[in-house]
Amino acid sequence: MIDVVDRQTRSRMMAGIRGGNTKPERLLRSMLHAAGLRFRLHARELPGRPDIVLPRHRTVILVHGCFWHRHRSCRFATIPASNADFWAGKFASNVARDAANEQGLLAAGWRVAVVWECALRRDPDSVAVALKDWLLSREAGETRIKHFD
Image 1 (cartoon, rainbow, N blue to C red):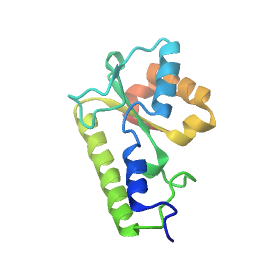
Image 2: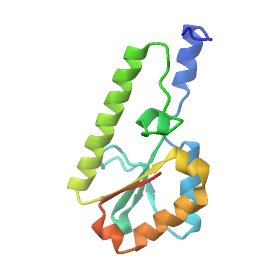
Image 3: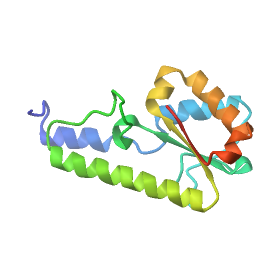
Image 4: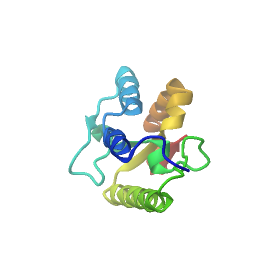
């Protein structure tokens, strides 16, 4: 399949994709704040600079975009038709880096919540409620990593 835009335009478009303060991230932060939870953002001292850090609950929240982080069985986790080898390598390194960051956080004693973009698109209110319930429940102490999708 041939790209519909020229190489320079595609490069500019891809460079414009932000790595932090994304729309799903901002939405979840707003809802958590409204629910009375206080947090830090992008803590540099933690593996992978997690999106949201709740020190009081010793929990980090990673807000993953389905495309970039390869959410299984998600309609947003498409694979570009052009330059397939590049994308396969890029996605594999993203998934490996995510796994290493999660293991580093767990080893450091943090609980990890992964919130997927599609869940926030579908029903952000229920994700925020489920996340808060998990944080404040006994299950949070037992479940060290939780996916919200």
